[in-house]
Image (cartoon, rainbow, N blue to C red; front, side, top):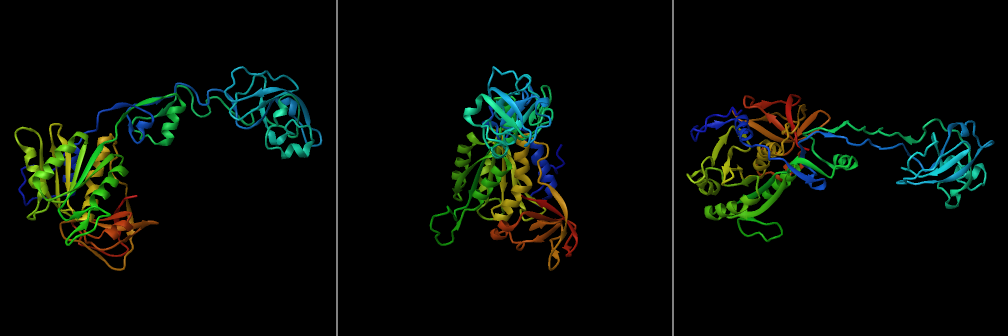
Length: 440
């Protein structure tokens, strides 16, 4: 339940970081589950417990190329006194009709092939002459099974204990075991297990579709030539990459000029493929707060329950923020500030948890640790603001990277953590313990 201040708070009200985040997470709901093929389910969150229908492995099988034999027939075998056994045939992986291994006999067996009836253990081919009949030295050097040795005789130069080199039925998982719990994110190992137990489809919450767009007439696409007063659009690239890193399917929209009608049309066009929309820029109190102007329509009578509220947060960087829902499906929208560091920090604090909530995860936040501040001088922070400074974390310590400026992209690229300075702290001395948000 949200602990945010009432939405009737005045324009000068300073919302706390926690109030704003609580309001977002109280509004965003996990996406409805769907059934997907295994590869389409990669990165999705499982919504059902998975019970193993068949044991893994489903039968006793060999972990080596070699010979399936009886233990008694190779007991005491040595290079001087090898055990000579009759080779009755081959056992290959996938073979259904199995040979029977009797006293004094051996079956040539391949890795993964079923242990044939009568056999009790596996002798690796390196412990034999490979069926070549060339004596103990050749046998110890053998590295493969000779094709012509499918029948005839093999000499074994070392004993093998019961069930040596045998993968037992159910030694991985047994039928009826719970292989996976609801809430598991499906990565390659999990998809491998699902395929191994015969599951071709699985019920999951789909990866959220996130549309990212930046605003500003000064923005130019990378690889284009800069004109006077222009800068390259980095925010939309950073936030799209961050959304994908969080687990979303993210779409980047090219920068939109400072025109409310154009921005409104662009947003409306993108709603068809969005479970969440993220904008950056145009949320401050300047003359061209185009996002505010463009999104004021969302609260009209034709779309009850929709609307975007723009707020001032007691944080640095990232004071101006916007949040609400738009369109007939009440698609959540987060409006972030335009300065690169402000935009990225805001994403980590607010957008990433929203994406993880849409995925159906319960732990939606980056991990946090306590670390020793390693700095040459004290850190200062404005009174009443929660500050998030970039840093590098290693071996229980964190070192500030760059200054406090919200435009310092190069310093952001070097950081792997955020140093948190609480609202009631104005100075942090070197060696003090601080809270750190780990970004990588």
